Length: 266
Length: 77
Image (tube, rainbow over all chains, first blue to last red; front, top):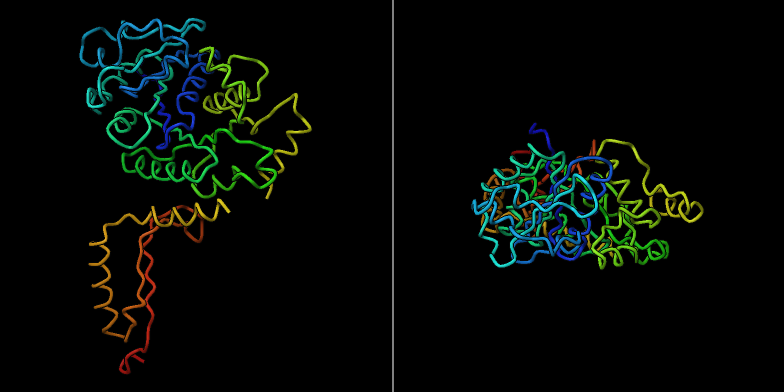
């Protein structure tokens, strides 16, 4: 008991795919048999419920739990498809000051007794909501896209995490477009990793399947074929300590080997 | 191109010591070095940044000072 691991998904910049990443890592780990709760800390702008397809089932939220208006178990929403997967939604009508970091530490400690993984979706920005989201976390994964603004914000967040005692965050580079990288029109993953000087956890290709799955409220990781689903499964396996090659894709062998050459050769 | 622009932006972002604090350090460094040499105070450049350590590439915070020396004082040559 109390052995769960709390991971915060953060970025600084908004719109880089934190919520999608949270939903997919959470769902992926649940499919692999772990007990997982995904926690939305974006109070006032909740979205994780929609990406998970659970928006119609919300009765209580994180503020209700923290304020004691309901029991923790009442606040948790069971996933509609996968056993062992739960959502703790953000409040939509309160503001970010409705929860403080001390309350978050206490909440995450309780969740760790019940779950193997607590995946915390951070709001954009570096204000109170961000501080809440990292307060109880053991580890941090930083999501960025191959754009100057997103990498810049990621760099800032790395510094802030260190200042709060969360060292060695890992990087997820989202929305890579191989055709553009190949042409030299997009920064490659190697450059980003080099500049930020942190470990790479995974690369997610820019994939239409993610848009479609988000519209359905069913995280793409549960699907077999899409490239992005495989990339998310690889990330889940790395979280579990397995060694997985970057974007190890069976049905895209030719394309892939070229890709890997471009992305990772020196 | 993006990589180079990003690097420049980050050098600036990472130097987030307060200007007042940097001025204090600058004043003290000038005072100490002036004991030993005439320096070009206008050309003095001092900044706080993050860089990779030479021998093992670990990222570290560093205070980088570039102090143009005009002439070392005679009694120290």
